[in-house]
Length: 467
Image (cartoon, rainbow, N blue to C red; front, top):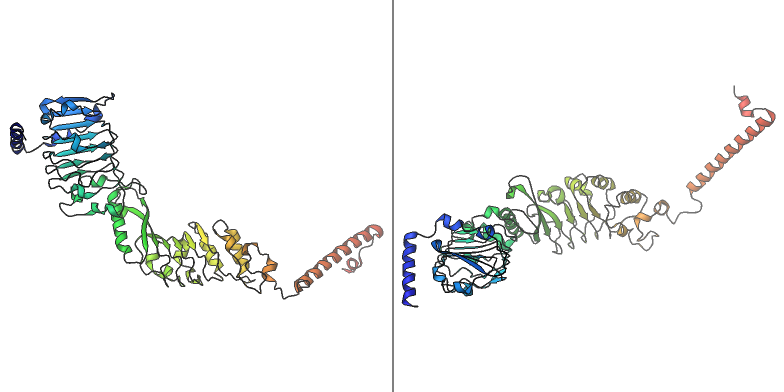
């Protein structure tokens, strides 16, 4: 290092000691210059304000300024022409730089960490770009960095180790499509000095898809709580959707929809505990027989969609008259041990206005004159809700003509007349023949009397005898 350069650095340290850094106005009045003065040319163009030691460049940095970099304390790069920014290369000669702004450009990546030579750099603004990634040690060499503004970029995930610099006090992140996942739980850290404590605009952070536009803090709180509660089960849990109520959105003003998957876990009974806001519960492929918890355990109050297919359920009688049966949205009972069910109770439930789907296929349904007619009527009447009506069949029995037939298509004769009975001369058939014969006799006698009266003028004998 030359003697002249060493002397300049010493003078600059003395200046910093007495000036105590930039004022608040110094930090903010340059931020919008790239937007206030758009640049139409494709060639680099720079303007230096000597009184403020500020260099503003559009569409790149001219090489001539590298030789004069020691005079620059504020560097503003508007419409940066490249997709990457190599701070080692660009800032190599800017040893006394105190503020850097990169704005209004298609920049997507900071390719290297900021060099240790930028030891006086106090504020970095990278705003209004397509920045989506930067090295985890991007700012680790900047011992004077106090403010980092990364608003309105394309950041989806943030490695918080990049913020582990001792002097950093203020971080701005609003306007980025941040993913609200378990990895974002760092934002909840209340400890002083944590990355979360440095984020100034936490209340303005919003989630990206699938919680698009929802406030980040309450969503991440819900996810963190769900993860904690899910550890008390043998299931997998997922926050699938969030609906906001009117007004300022906090965790208490958000309606969460959680899916809990306990399929194929070898369960012999329904779980005693579920995470809060469980709306979808999957219990497929277990050995559960009893559905009573739906009626007595309050953790099932919010469950709207229940998948309990391929289990050992033999009856749903215990659900009759229950609040759950009156409010469910989807019930999947495929592949269980059901032979019948209370059709009147299910009929009432299907009129609750919430039902979207009912699955009853692959059960061994009884096909007799007592149960099947009303069950068949229910299936036909609600065929839009019974999603697997083609799989609802009579029990598979070798000695039954209705074996494995679709219940929807059975006739009353097939249901109510046993094949052992004399099908060609059933008592009901005899009665029908007798009644039909009497009707024909009465009609014939009426026609004969009318013909006789017209021809002879005599009234029928029975009419003449009536007083």
